[in-house]
Length: 259
Image (cartoon, rainbow, N blue to C red; front, side, top):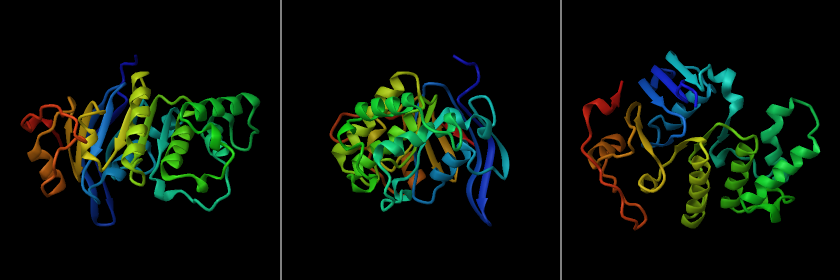
């Protein structure tokens, strides 16, 4: 295992015009972690993810991804954006969407090889999508579309996987199935960073928690208390894990805040 952290952010700030999105964020994520990123709408969760991926550049501070600049190492990670950004009317088959995940390794404009199609088929079978692989992605259910986007992100065997609200448009059963796929993937050593609005999943799947509302509170052991969650969201938020007994939440320590 490499000595470099998977993600290293030092005093990172970013603003949209005069409106700060994230302020003075310092964060270290180790290899093999499963990070849950939570916070209110507009609190900077997606901005933080985009900074990690190098899709936007910080106005101050620095970001290192897998030991290099995000631009240089981004080909080693997978990314599942918000499903709302998908053009459901575009007539592209599920198998072809999955193959797009190999375009970076194959090269722009290069034809896919037989081995690429085989790899895509194996990934779709693993996610239970073999029966719909030739259907247009817009005809799938919300849960199936999310699994297709996950297949696209996973097919190139990434070292890290970033997901932005992957269960926002699917039901509880589909969410649990998707989280279980992520848990198994993380068990193989893949680092997972998951932006979610579902606080209930924290006690079941993630190993560490980043509470984001412009500034960041990081809990490397995954244990958060009611007060810190309330401060992050700016209101009372129940820590419920779908009826499953959740872990003990300890008091928020001052040294958990990275700023």
